[in-house]
Length: 391
Image (cartoon, helix red, strand yellow):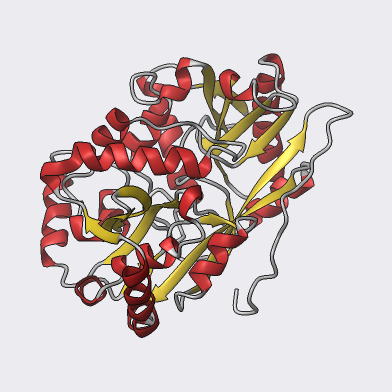
């Protein structure tokens, strides 16, 4: 008979982190997320969502007392004040191919969420930023990028048989940088540059404070209308940049200005996930030297978009193309032969259109699901798009 325990201490976390190693033990594509990244999401000192929210982590133990699955549940009471009804979330779901175990984990999480007042649940999602650990991978089963959800195909059956409804498509675009139509973008930048006062600037590490202020101004204006929006503040951005300093390449972090006002940005980082695979989720004094050695030896890198946005005041000024064109200039394309653009939702049709003009294609699809937890709650999915045949 299985049992489900809540993570309360170090021993609980050990079991929680052990579960996916059992699930993916025969999957060569899987790259274990950093345990510190996962635990940080449930640490009130690191995740401000816990200031006005609650979270719980659970591990399922099989009849032999070995971890066979895991799940987290969380709810943000402050964000729910702006929604028609309270919505909770589940994330970090992993389970061996055993449907009754999966359903037991779903039931445990939903029971916890009902007790907290949730009337619907989204999943699998992150408790916090939407640019990481978001959605179920259903198309393009490639090795995951850093902080990207990866899962076996049978998870989709688990979610849908339990009653989850596909709610939004999360798209990842991939491009060989040699195919980016730079002639067209250079012409666009030249034309708009003569018409308007536009300039581009990549990050300068001695001006991080100014970049953080400009980033927040654009980001908060660009995304405030979205359901999961949370304002960001310069101190948070500076802290994130400090944490990422060992891997930051300032040349692929771009801000575009219109009449000297911040108008658009693109934050891209070298993707380190393939370098992290041998670490097996643990980054410490034993594994860090190997990571740095592999990074030093790498001649080419893969770039991963973290954030992209245009201030609504300048969306008719061609800023999106200017930002992406500058980010894809020759020096960056030579260093990064492959770029993964910031994940976007399919219902963000403007961004999808801009990306497709970049000569890139949809590489993988994650689905975020929603399920009503009581009668009378209607789940209305966002508009979906038709996917290319190769996926």
